[in-house]
Image 1 (cartoon, one colour):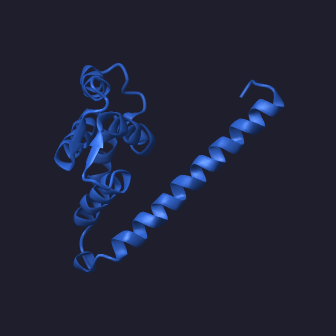
Image 2: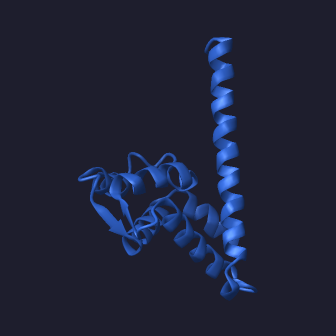
Length: 133
C-alpha cells in the first residue's frame, strides 16, 4: 500500500473488520429471508426484492430512512454498482439529491427508485447483460 507497516496493518484490520461485519449482515439477511414462509420456493427475483426491502427496514425500523442514511447505505452496500460512477451526471444528480437536506426522511418506494437509477447508470449493467446471454 505504500504506507508504514503499522499503517498497512491497521488498514488490513479495518478491511477485515468491515468484511466480517458485511458477512454477518449477509448471514442475518439470509436467515431473515428463510424465515418468511411466503418466500419458500420463491424465485431469484422475489428473493432479490425481499432482500432490498429487508436491507431498507433493517437500517431504519420506522419505515423511513434519512437521505443521509440512504446515501451511506448505498455507498457501503451497493459498491459494485456505484464504484467508478462519480463523474456521471446521473450519479451526481442522485447523490446530490441525497446530500441536499440529508435529514429528510424517505420511504421504501423512493429508496427502490434510487437503487434502480444507480443500477441502470452503472458500468456493471453491460457486464450483467452479457452474462445473461
